[in-house]
Length: 549
Image 1: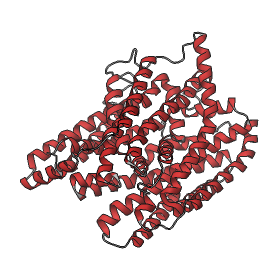
Image 2 (image 1 turned 135 degrees about the vertical axis):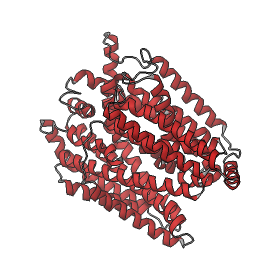
Image 3 (image 1 turned 30 degrees about the horizontal axis):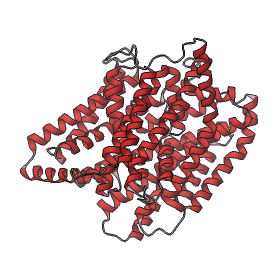
């Protein structure tokens, strides 16, 4: 299900249906030089990041070892890649200015909350991963459940991302699918084996640089077009809040679904618990730097929102075939074809390739970390020498990269990127977020209640999906259905977890739950500068909501 949800990435190949255009043919010649150069640069970064690792944690997680600037850039790069560029520009082309909600409601409030509450908690407890925090609160069974879910998701995502890279290279550069998949997987495998998470992070920074080189010009041109259109009284933007119904099953979006579903459940669940993002935040050397990593990335997200949404708005106006003969995901490629010459177009294609390749690497490295630290070390072979865990982690990297190659040959066809991703996080991520949050808020929730709540919430999401697809429940869009499904899943998880905990808990379970809960209630220092950054970010958020209302 997760693999099919992210299958929309493969549409990048179909975005280049205009490959026979003259400037595309010239760009392909340049691309044949740029792509090998980028792959060689990735290997050189892995070579430069290599070192003699003595512990598996330093190899897999690089905990508390990187400067804040590097951590912030990698944090941004892990979230702002080709997937976001293509997906959210498509949302902007389809729904207009409402696409800004994915940043203003779906990201910034959760980023601020994560910086002020969760990252100080993580640093105080000296945890290395998200499953480890669930172990502190609920015990080893919940850590194992979370680790298995995360590991499976990361494996599937790596395969889908690799398929997208291979398909893109097949169309844009003329490589065969097998050559593209094998070459990129080999490059990823090589630099992760050399430098571990360090090499992955530094390559993400290279990827972010290339993405900005390909995206900033088209973003600036789009902003200029919108300003000219505004001066000539062309209505292009629309409204962010005016005319939006409070709750409506026929509207594409409604206030309830956006604020509660997207903002609180999906947004907070992603930014506060996502393994890849937290893995990067944990690499910051100091507590202050770790707290401020999400906040600085929040400012970057606001800039990225302009670079991504504005081209989608312009594309909807310039290319009337979007949504009919052309997919909305083709908005950015069509703009690049129209505005860029061969050189810039080849840079843009390299940017998309680099970003997708970085996504493969991030998922492979994260899988190795989850498998080694949260499953193998704690459940299968505890108490072994660090050299043994280093060997196991490298074997996990080879396994993940190899499986991604085989997994990439499986194809699924879905009509939207963002709708499928929101849907899958609703099914798998929302119950975990609910268990995570209620475990911090209430000491009465037991391990048994958490398990029951998780599976009940997941079942509620699946049932809601079935009813929505069958027409029994009707929504304006599938994305709106995902937002409301997230609300139902979150509430179901919380209610079932509390009811089971209260009705079947023993005195022993109650005492254990209270003892574990008390570990999460110690004082967590939040620096004054962190509060200042958070305040500035929230003021900007309110100002943008007011301006675009």
